[in-house]
Length: 117
Length: 114
Image 1 (cartoon, rainbow over the protein chains, first blue to last red):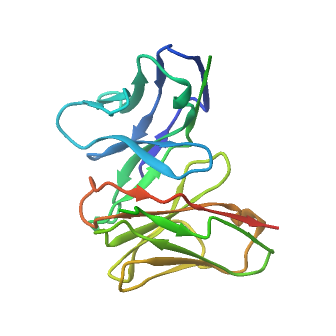
Image 2: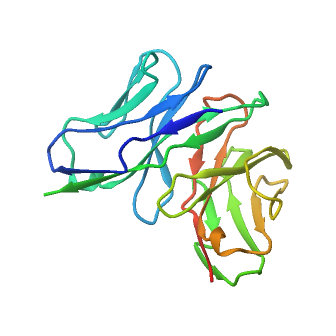
């Protein structure tokens, strides 16, 4: 079974500093990878996704993630964070163990990004 | 487009009771999945419905059941509630086929069992 590991439960950072949130996955087959963000008392919002093609994917708000097949990683980065980026970030992999054609998402335990002034 | 809507937003139930949570998918989506997110944890897949049938199921007991209606909306039912069922329940809708199908999530229903 596929699994997702987020190595850091919490990452404190100062505003305008760079940040990296780490994600590793285990899989013996091709995967599709996602980063979701969850603001307090809200549901999940898709931040970015890797399906195929370029291993570097970007979001509209300055985040980027790089798919590294050899290291089975999909780390999320932002060169300069804002206070408003404070949230919980979840890495997820798409899984279809029974080959039904229907996907389910397997999530990591999340990383809380805390941006302070 | 209203996106995925869930009701109610908050709910308090007593241990042993039964609860029903509701979800309306995003316009154009016909597949609904339910996830349980315990405090401090990532969401865990409960089950998925397409064409009014359960297509996949996660590692949850039979106390958790669901239904999908012809208009694609869905319900999650939990019987004999336990304190450990307290969580945020998330509904996600998507198109059914392909591992690259993007799932859109609702705001969730916060269930507290006392």
